[in-house]
Amino acid sequence: MVTVMFSSWQHGIIQPHLAMHVPDGFLSLPVLLVTWIIAVGLIAISLKRAQAEYKERAVPLMGVCAAFIFAAQMVNFPIPGGTSGHLLGGTLAASLLGPWAGSLVMTSVFIVQGAVFQDGGLTALGANIFNMGLIGTFGGYYLYRTIRFAIGRDSLNGMVIGIAVAAWTSVVVAAIVCAFELALSGTVPLPVALVAMASWHVLIGIGEALISVVVVSFIWRSRPDLFYDPPRRKAPLSASRF
Image (cartoon, rainbow, N blue to C red; front, side):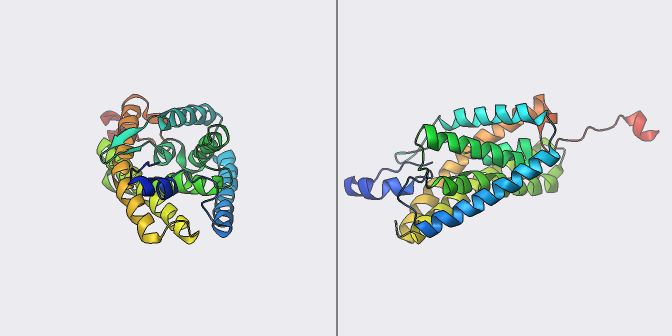
């Protein structure tokens, strides 16, 4: 999410439209319907895949991950120029739980935020889930996985570079998608939306990447088995010779 400081008239007219948590009334009916259909479809697929692939031990981890991301999103970090950002966490959740369970965790977080804390409109919940949750979990996970496996599946460097690039990219892409949604709805001209959303979220994405790297680095060193794609243990030398 971003909060941008403009001049007095810009602050009152443009600023609310440029937040990642889209409020009610800023997206047109066609855009709302499309994002709702995509969000519901991916969530339904995720439910089936999660039930088929995951064991019962993943359920507590999903709960802990959801609680951590929810709490972390409440903490804003300052960005130069009068802006602030917070963790989205889609790529972080996907690296630990995989894209299917990760998308369910992010969906539950955004439902609670919208319904209880009015952080984003209820009619725009499908768009917010799609923009901030599903893009990060699915797009972020497969980008992270590709980079990590290319550099070294079982190396800390591969994980760090993969999660950093994927987390930053997911935030920027989500901001660009949100800008197009606002422009297609006639809320904000596309050039204005793109410049404001992309420019600030390039910086906010750096914070996303740093937080994600710190968290997964700690887990990598303490409980690497918690990753969806855990590093493989090297066989003892005597065993490999045998």
